[in-house]
Amino acid sequence: MVSAAGLCCKPLSDVLAVDYGGPSLATNVIPSHFSGDREAAVVLDVACGSGLVAKQMEEEGFKQILGVDGSEAMLQMSRKTGLYKELKRCLLGEEPMPVHWGLFDVVVIVGALSVGHVPVNVVRELFNFHATKNGGYIYMTTRDSFDNAEFKYALETELKQMEEEDLWTCVEVTEKEWIKVMPEQDYNYTTGIVYLYKKI
Image 1 (cartoon, one colour):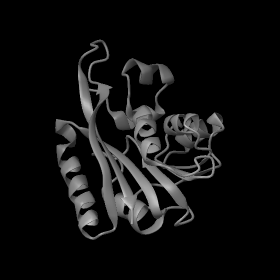
Image 2 (tube, rainbow, N blue to C red):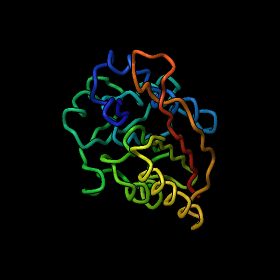
Image 3 (cartoon, rainbow, N blue to C red):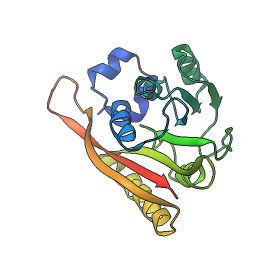
């Protein structure tokens, strides 16, 4: 089985082979709800990897993109895209985020919220108290697979708890085809859950 969280560091040919849908789903969901000036909006791409999300966001008109990732090798790949205004290294969940709090109109984390990668507690640290502006959007994804079931439950419990605390409102939750489990089979996909919240 292919892990979506590991695709950010793979060659583009590998990503295309498994038809990884995470980055493109961000551009399908966010622009349909974001009504502000896209060129002026400041976007934080968390666990930015090789820049797949930034590429999709830039094509939708978002120009002010900052990235954070725990791997220097990934940051080097992101730099080569020329899409980021700034890139910072940070081990998410272990180190304080090296960003200007309250700056971001949109915060995106695609493919990293899953078992063995970015921990659930990063959601509250990043998206609620600090990084996102009031009225800003937070876009997250996770895999809907057996090996990720416990993580998904913990994540959704935290998202719901934050909603009950009136910290944000749920805008959209959808299930999408995410990634080919076996690339040689056109029909065999695992699914992913897409979450979009708006900070109050």
